[in-house]
Image 1 (cartoon, rainbow, N blue to C red):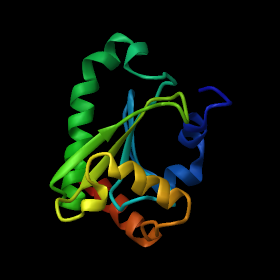
Image 2: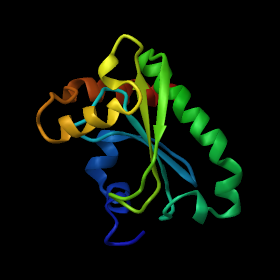
Image 3: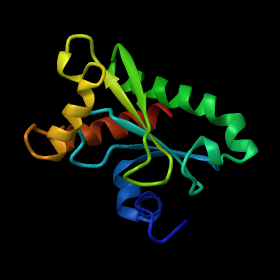
Length: 147
């Protein structure tokens, strides 16, 4: 953990863990996007160890990454019933690997392809309503049952 990393701080915060964390292994942590969440079921797959991304993986992380992404993506689909799951990681806001796993519904054109970034920014900026906190908690509880 680094004291200046927002993701590391989230991983250590008991209230955040209770509210959003779904599962944790030695290497990976799955959590719901915190409020204000852009969509119910928008999960994140984080490295437990502070690292910026795959370029910094240690051998066990590299060996298990594909399975972790697949399992977390399947979890998004199970809890939301979505058609697809988008996976996006930039790492500029926090240089700690956190892969966004975004439920994509074919009937929602406002979240297709790169429009999902506009959707995200609109929620963060208050121009679009976020997912209701009760919806987020329902998704967390459901995901915990599946994982």
